[in-house]
Length: 237
Image (cartoon, rainbow, N blue to C red; front, side):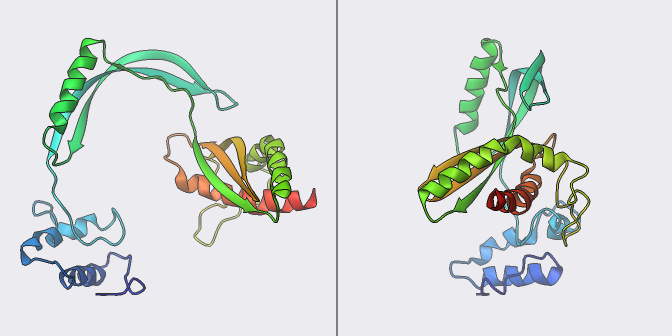
C-alpha cells in the first residue's frame, strides 16, 4: 500500500489510477467492488467528470435519495451596522428536502413529522444571530499573563474591526503567495470574546460573511489579526 507521504491529492489520471490500485491492493478488497472505482456510468467522462469536486478522488458510491415536502414560515432579515439581526417581515414557503441514506424507516419518520408540522401551520423559523467563529489560542508562562491578555483583546475588539476594514491599512492591498488578498473584505469582524484556561487564552472571533460560507475568509482575517495586530500591539502595550 502506498505511504501517506507518497499519496497525491491531485486528480490527474495517473494519480487517480495510482490511488485506485492502492485500494485494490489493500486487504479486504473484493473484485465485486470494482464498480465503486469506475465512476457514474451515466455521466459522460465517468469519474474524471468529478475531478474538480474534491481532492484525492478515487471512486464513487450510489445512495438512494428520498424527497419529503416541508411547509415553512420564514423570516426576512437584515444586519444593522453592529451586526445585530433585524427581522423585516415573514413569508410562507415550501421545500423539497432530499434524504440520501439507506436506513429503512427514516424517510417515513420524517414524512410523519412533516405532516404534523404542516397541520400545525408549518415549521416557523427565527434567526437570533448571524455569525461564524474562528478560534485562536495564545499560550503564556502563567495564568495572570493570560488574564491580562484576555482583557486587552476584548478592550481592543472594536479597533480590530475598524483596522480590518480601513482602506488605509497598509496590508489592505497586499496578497499572499497564493495570490489571495491578505485581508478579506467579505469577512466583517463583529465580536471578540476570550476564554482563559490556565496559562492559555482562547480568542473567539465572530464574523459575518454575507452569502459566503466563509471559513477560508475568516481564517485569513484571523491570521492577519493575530500576527499583525494582536501579537505586536499587545507586546508594545
